[in-house]
Amino acid sequence: MAIITVDALLTGIRRDDVFDWLGDPANHDILVRGAFDDVSGSGGTYEFRLSTPGRTRTMGYIFESKDDSHGGRRIIVKTTGKRTDGQINYSLRTMKPSTNTMVTIRMDYNPGGTLGELINSSGLAKALESGIRIILSNMEDAIPRES
Image (cartoon, rainbow, N blue to C red):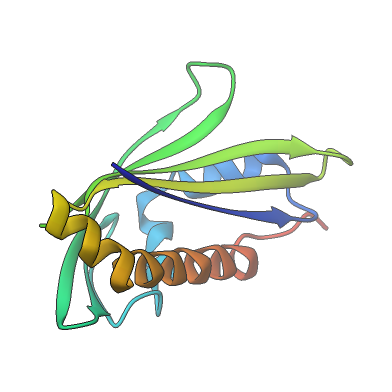
């Protein structure tokens, strides 16, 4: 199992406001725009194409649920694809002051056996991390701030 983790501090946005905004699958249209080479789909279900050395790969992104059952706040997204089958968690933490929110995107995925590990280390992980960073940037720009 491969793991990619990327954080961003959203200033001027409370955790519960971020949770509510991310919990609407339609808002993910804004998040994924431009994150990968080609994005198709809407309303929380997408297909991405990403370039890796040797070939273009396809990854599915399917909004699953909002989860606040453990006292924290996270959004769960399922990923599909030959080398990208797994899950993305958007985890939210309140920072000081309480109007700031730390967003951690953690992608756990299965690149496959020995060949998959080689493919992952030769460009797949870098392409996925780059896309996740763009998703975070889009989130910073899109979520409404408190007045």
